[in-house]
Image 1 (cartoon, one colour):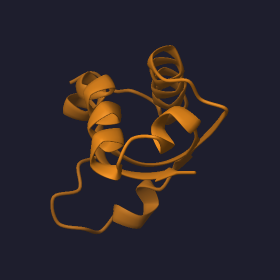
Image 2: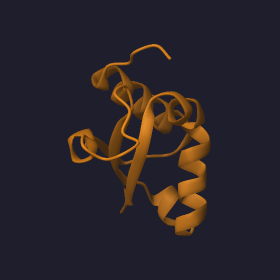
Image 3: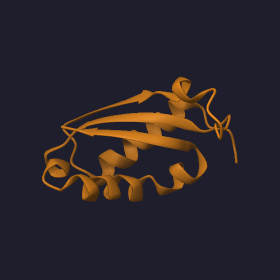
Length: 89
């Protein structure tokens, strides 16, 4: 796995989501520090918190909207993301 810096990762995640979903507003926070001492924490893997304002996602139920996001970010999740917190409003 190549090293990915957090700013690059956030930019990629944002671009991919905005390409496939109609998003009014999005912010992505790096919450990796919360997991630093957890067992299973890997150095180049991040914990992201996605705050997404999207009428399109709001129309789906929670599971469907999460699945859609996970599908879009599949490659990043496999390589660089340890966990994602999703907040849709």
